[in-house]
Length: 390
Image (cartoon, rainbow, N blue to C red; front, side, top):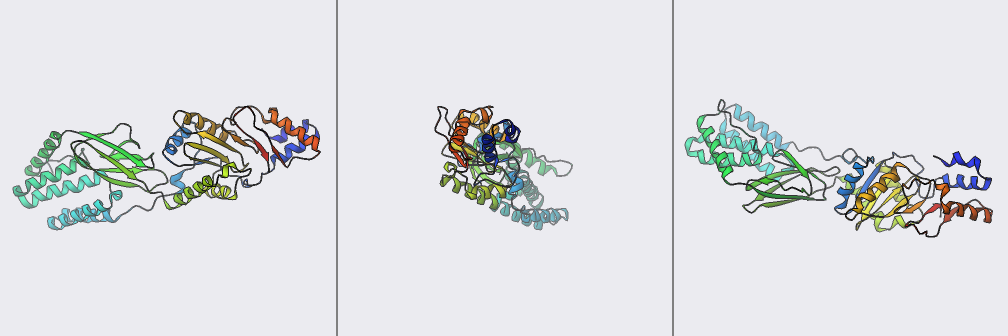
């Protein structure tokens, strides 16, 4: 619905008012941007609000596409390839050296490997210890197999490929690992909302509600979150259990965007009569029409094309779901220029039936001028609306 549809049916001065309201407000974008939202909320509510908006079907900025991670590290993979080639060439000493070199590299760069990759390294080291050293190295082989199975419990030792002594040591490792039982591993990240892989399986999103059970010892966890670099973390678990808390690093472009969003909040830009140019600049660079900003349990959503805002949205507890619905309605049904507090969006009532609209029209008629701006006093409803330029 547009104002142009109604203007011919109203007195001339009202038509002039409507034409004024459809003009691009000061501080709003004159460029038509994709109707999607970028979410920047300080604290743990960002992940919850993002999930709630997705559940509402709200189109959101694709952070992976907008802020791609750095290219994958290939140095470790190169060492693994060289180790395998030496093994195939039956140069066991050279293979052991390369496997150990690859292992050391991955210990220093856990983000560059997954649990299956580490499991394979320890498996080869175990097999090589026995193949190269005989029964004297069977204990060393079993220890490596235990490490391998902790990282990748799905490993098997094919007796058609490996000798009986290797298979015996592997089976002993299975028994030893089973005898240790399992304990809880609590998993979280900062910021929250990262997908987690453990032992090659997805175990949930941080904070992981149902802590997985693992055998005591060292485990590798892999974290991924749109807009952040992939993160690997070793967790050492004892008989009492363990916990892992990954510190995620935003990609370079995402860091700059978050800093810009935080600056807008710190400057209380949402309380101004018009949006600052920096808000329009941020949205234009992100190619998104709506900015969802929040801190200290409160959020606001801005439409940079019209300058409209909803403020005072609670992100605490159950209120977050209701706030997500309001944001979703605001984005799905954008209105002409106004600034609204929580509760104004999505009530389905056309703007020309609001009491303050006709009061504004009366002011224009009495003043004999087209409205350059209309300030409306606070109504019994919990929002305040300002139309046009200040």
